[in-house]
Each structure stands twice: as C-alpha cells, then as structure tokens.
Amino acid sequence: MPELLWRLHRARVTGRLTVTREGVTKSVWLAYGQPVFARSTDSDDRLTERLRQRGLLTRDEFETAQVAIEAEQGARRIGEILLDTRLIRKQVLDESLHEQLVWILDSMFHWDAGAWTFHDDETSDEPVTLNLPMAAIIMEGARNRLPLPWMWETIGGAMRHPRLKMRGDRPRVLEILVHELRLVPSEQAWLGRMEGAESIASMLDDFEADERELVALLYTLALTERIELLEAGPTPSVSIS
Image: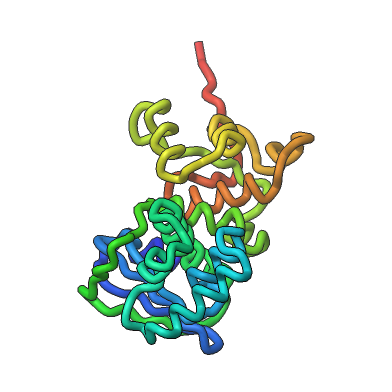
C-alpha cells in the first residue's frame, strides 16, 4: 500500500482508490496525488468507535450515539448527529475526523494481499478533508504499522550507507524534510548522520538507538526518493602533490 500510494502521488492523479481485502473495503479520494478523504466498511474504523477508544465518548454516550445514528438511517453524516445531540464539540469533532482519516489510511499498510481499482476524476465533497502530506502519512504508517522485515527488504540491509539527496542548501533541505514527514526530535537527530560515511549497522550500535524508529525513517526516505542507500561509504579523495 505505501508503494501504491506513493506511485499515485507522484502521478498527481485525481480520483478514488478502492482497496478490498477479506470482505473489507476502503476508499481513498485523491486530488492531484494528495489524499483528501477516506471511507471504510471496517467497524473498527467507524468514527464513534474511534471516539470511544480514545476516551472521547463514554460507554453510555457511545450507546446514545448509536441509537441516534440508526434512527437517521444514513440521512445525515455521523458528525452532524454527534453535534446535534451535543455529545461532542465542533473542534474535537474536526480533530477526530482528521485522526480517523489517517487511521483508515495507515491501517491498510500491513495488508499483504487484496485487490484495488482506481476511478479517475471522482472527487469528494466532504466538508472535513485530510491536510497531511503523503510523505507524512507514509511516515506515520511506517512508525506504527509496517512489519520491520518489509522495511528492511526495501532498505537492503544494515551494511548500506544512507546519504540524503541534497537538492539545495542543506539546512533548508533538512527543514523541508522535518516539515513534510512531521518528524519528532529523535527522528530529526538521525538526519544529521545520513551523509554516506556511516553504515546503518554502525548507527544501530548506539546504546540508545531505536531500530524501528531508524528503519521507519530510512524506509520512508527511500520510498519517497529523498535518500541514497550506498553499498559502501564514499571513497575519500586523495591529494597528489
């Protein structure tokens, strides 16, 4: 799924991606390659279920919401029903809808089978849309969903030497990466060591190194073509006098 989503992003497509696996169907709307909305038939992806799991609805409030939703029979959006019944505030609803969209997307990242179709030029008219860069969505899925062996396969092994692609001023490139991938400080710290001289194995030898954190970052950088994974470190230049 991450590879498929990134291909669609690079192609700047507009339309609806539908993915089906074991009776579950998830749809993602894209505008010029950027995900803007998602839907799922999985009960775990429902807004009310996500609110209950996050402690934003009590059990009684959850049951009240279910009764109100069933009474509407699909005539109105769930968010509107929750607001009208005063079970949630507008700001919390918008934040929760955004979190739900990300959840629907990255919950597909561990799927290793299924079928997908793409419907060109089909747009979404939902009032709340996703405003997170595709690279950040992939980074989030790598942190929390993707199995380590899958990511290691993409990276190519611990003896590779990662080197960031510098298209411009280095501080500016790092600033852009931090923003686009929504990196936390510990992830940001790894970027400064990706100059090609140090192997991944050497980086992981650090006492406090977190393998999943580093591998997830390297995987995302490799998939989004922000990094080179060299077979060995760069050959030092030799001055001949």
